[in-house]
Image (cartoon, rainbow, N blue to C red; front, side):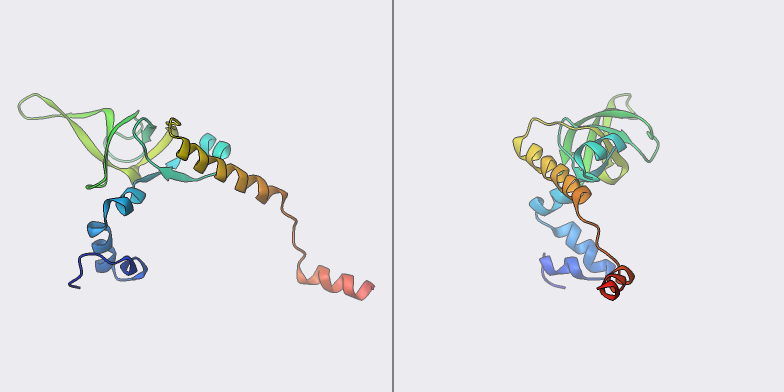
Length: 152
């Protein structure tokens, strides 16, 4: 595997190639890895289960030492796949405080930053899709179809 990056590694079953794909991916692809689940009320409202994180979103930490704490996203480090949340800090040996980088998979979005028009458009698509699913006609199974044919 001499190549630095190939989009075809995504389809590979081999863990080694999957790790290489994620590690060497360009930033526009790495950004897509930084998504988190929406809270239950946001799922109902927007018709989506997860969405990419943005600066300004309010998130709840679901795993780790700081489980249950909430805060706004202060910074997203796409290169490292980490998220910095306001108020989540650790004390260093010299007494100063530093931010803790968290993995996006350990977060849940509780409120969205809706300043971006493109993001609003994406969320509206999800709502339209769920509405159309509810109105879709129920297909008949084979037994019902055969009964109708026999009646004719």
